Image 1: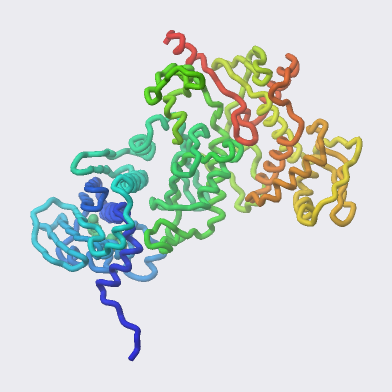
Image 2: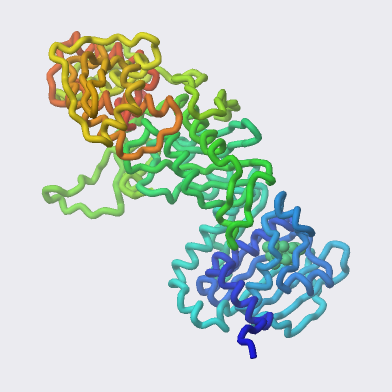
Amino acid sequence: MGIIRVLPEGLTNKIAAGEVVERPASVVKELMENALDAQAARIAVSIKHGGKSLIRVSDNGTGMEHEDALLCVKSHTTSKIREVEDIFSIASLGFRGEALASIAAVSRLTLSTRERSQPVGTEIQLAGGTVERVREAGIPVGTTVEVSDLFFNTPARKKFLKGERAEYAAIADAITTTSLAHPGVAFKLSRDDDPIFEYPRASNLKERILQTHYRQWDAYLLPLDAARGGVTLQGYIARAELARTNRTAQLFFINRRPVKSIPLSYALQRGYEGYLPAGSFPVAIIMLTLDPALVDVNVHPTKREVRLQDERFVLDQLTYAVRELLHQADHAPSISFTYRLDKNKKYAGGAGDVPPYTAVKEGKTAADLFSSPGEGQSTLPLPRESDQPVAVTPPGAAPSLKVKVLLGQIGLSYLIAETDEGLIIIDQHAAHERIIFEEILAAMESSEPATQPLLFPVTLELGFKESQLLEEYLPLLAGSGFVIRHLGGNTYCVDAAPACLHDPGAREIIGEFLHQAGEGREERSLQERRENTARILACKTRTVKANAPLSREEMEHLIRRLEQTNIPFTCPHGRPTIIKVTLNALDKQFKRK
Ligand code: ADP
Ligand code: MG
């Protein structure tokens, strides 16, 4: 006799539940998605014991007729797709028809629902997927699903649940994330019947972001709004100052579905190149809208992962849209010397203690600084071929720097100057790097870069891998003003260097260049390769250092050249070149305002 058996339905549902129902937060997510698919305007979530003893999700959506209510808790029952073709153009959040059956299989579930045209509603009670009771119920239009004793019949799964606090945090997170994609819907979360948060109906994403996240974000958000080639990008990215040490403040949605996507996160990061120091991750909430036919959501049971057709194009769109937006923003962090007592710290007054008063960034408390924490339409002039050059200066006027009076140097490292807005402090080294970087870029874009013959040509004996890299980058290096001859084998000779690199240590520069270029950084467009080349060269060139006395003429010269750069506010590595102290901040500080 054979040994293969067909599993009873109860068991298959339990197995399927393992994929969809990982923890209370996934139950909440599925139930919210059902409510949203049913056009709910209000969704209320109520939790007890981190969702382990009770999860209740109520909505005022369409509700279900009696017959549908009986069907919906069975597996593979859905109103959202009918035939196989429908999977390729899914507009609803659900489509598998598995969630309710899976949740019911591993809990005690009560579903009560009433459809508008029906005089009474239906209430169904199940335990471990078995219907125990069905009755009529006098309830308002809409649906309430109550899940108690999650995993009561799968003790192994129950053991994997985290502490109440962690499960509760995951639930709050799931609601907040979902709410961002549906600002027009009101959300509410209660714990043990106490309201924890409530997001009233909002008229747009910005309003919802401010309901859900720190109010302080307001001043830092830049609106993203771009469309091209059937891809629409909307949402908000934050100025570099708000960056985090990890990616937790990045949310991506595709057709209003929250997705986890490392490629999208990288594309975002590439957009911030030159605006953020290494190891910093931007804050961003990004909504992509594309033809559902180009998105495969049927990749993962929790629908958290999706597959995109023409992913490269979508990623490039994101990178360029972000770059353009950042280019138009003023990046100089401003400091206001607002004295505020930091209540969270005790000050014994001993050496090394934090003083009771701390200079803080505008609109933030000192605690914020130490914790890790205008609408315009733009159409991107993007080439579809990513290897074509992108305009160096994206269209749209960038804020510029205009210095009125140079006041002097302090600490042999910083220049102090006056602008219309107030006072600025310039990091002389960072500023010089920015200047050289842009000069090299400009040289690369000109047809005849200024070059300067070396007094003593430099011979380079390279390894095989290095010589391959050099060959690859030779056109770019030549474009910047290097003259490099191949002497045969892996030996090269540098005869001339870009004129803007004064006194270049050619051997060191090329060596470092090959070292960095070999690290396999992802650079796709010619523009990105140029910028990376310029960044490395600027970094290795002799620039004005910190701790260097400068004459008045040298300071003036540095400032005039900085004013002429496209992006005077950050060095090519994304660190600030300028910090502002506005007159407004001074007026406040001196109690004039
Ligand atoms: P799916 O959402 O993938 O279709 P579910 O198991 O989550 O599968 O739900 C099954 C069906 O039950 C849905 O297709 C829908 O018709 C109905 N349903 C579930 N929840 C609700 C709700 N809150 N309001 C109205 N109908 C619902
Ligand atoms: Mg569903």
